[in-house]
Image (tube, rainbow, N blue to C red; front, top):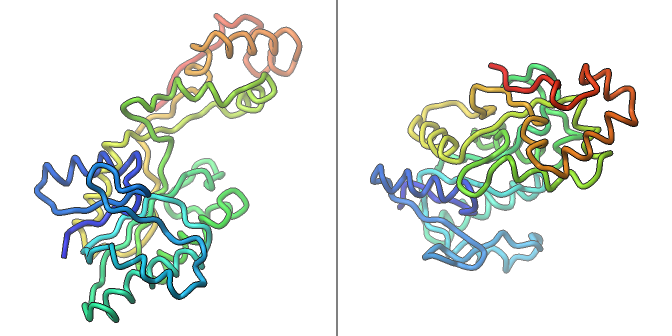
Length: 256
């Protein structure tokens, strides 16, 4: 029995591994190719096949299981959790009751402001929200809905690549607010949750204490700055929205 099993090492998993190692907490992580000493594993795509249950044989029993990858609906969540539990109880005759921690996104939270008790927008979250609800209600699990992740080589300035034309930029001007969370802070949050085994299952929105201005970040890219200049010159609604027709006069900055 190990303390923590990380299903999908990924971006957050690397920070979590560092923290667990520093705290002397035993753990194992999975990747799809078994790199860097991790367990080679992926959730089977054809979940109706009985032979897929053998895939859980490589996963050790753990006191806490962290799911870092998206589960597409209730069926996928049920298959993963029941498959893991059934393998250890039936094949190994070991009864385990791990804490389940599932990493989601704040994307489905459209209300302003939103809290952990705000109902997520199913149309925005889709099957992932269905999986989150099942993990909370059926398995007393913890869902951590994460704001924009950053850390290491993953920096907000790099997100300008998603804005390939001025129309895409225009759609972002109506709501420039940006919420972020560093990978190291996500790791600390996960550790805090799994240390409280009596914590009732539920949902948590994870962000730092600031609201950032996405435009302030984007216009550091000369290409994006050019798009904005074109919009200001051609679209009166943009001038009105920004309160000026000069880029250097746009009020930029974060708020508390």
